[in-house]
Length: 132
Ligand SMILES: [Fe+2]
Ligand SMILES: [Fe+2]
Image (tube, rainbow, N blue to C red):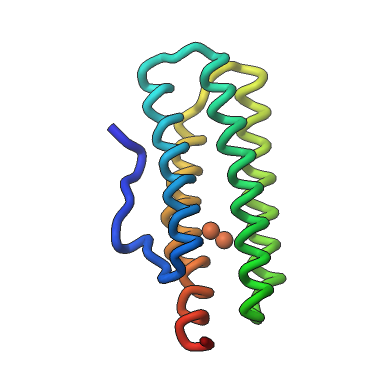
């Protein structure tokens, strides 16, 4: 079972960013699956690191893209990314201590994917469509 499957509602209309979002989804789903399968702590730790690293890369790519299209709400978007990374870091630190991935962590990932992509990323997708 996956945490969240790709659907049309996540399509923001910018192919390069869609494909990065799909990679994020794939890593999150893998983490969710391996956790449900009671994988070793070391394996979960490695996937968590992969997710963190890819998230940093995605946010940097997305911010560079937003700069390239002169998206007016870039600064606001950067702050949202920063706060997501802080929350992610706090969950990762909890895992380092306890070795357990809490349900609240997966709730956070799901919220991030659906609410951030549909609510926040969609805004630049719409902007890109009208400012070509
Ligand atoms: Fe974003
Ligand atoms: Fe994004």
